Image 1 (cartoon, rainbow, N blue to C red):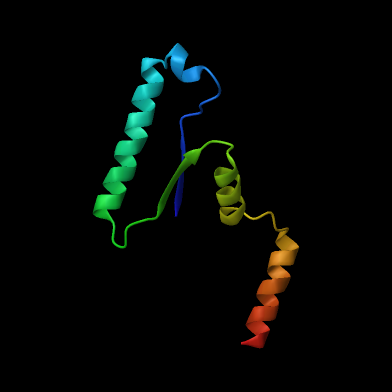
Image 2 (image 1 turned 60 degrees about the horizontal axis):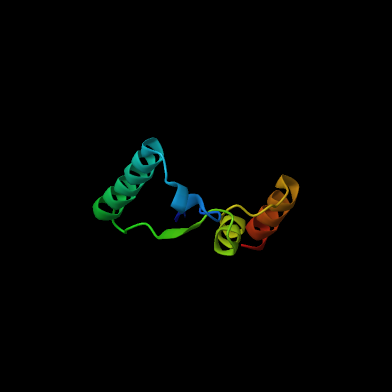
Length: 83
């Protein structure tokens, strides 16, 4: 699963214009994602959302949960012993 934040869009940003280097960076990232989707099997799941939006925060929390290492290891040990 890959999270691709879209360009930040605070009020008035699009009306002021975006620099050419930022546009080039965004298009390069999109081309990279398109290539990965076309070449890999099974294709990766790609979510596009605005940076710091509620959907982005939710996905980041699901992808990188804030679990202390010791808690993770204890759960792992319990799962191994139970198996």
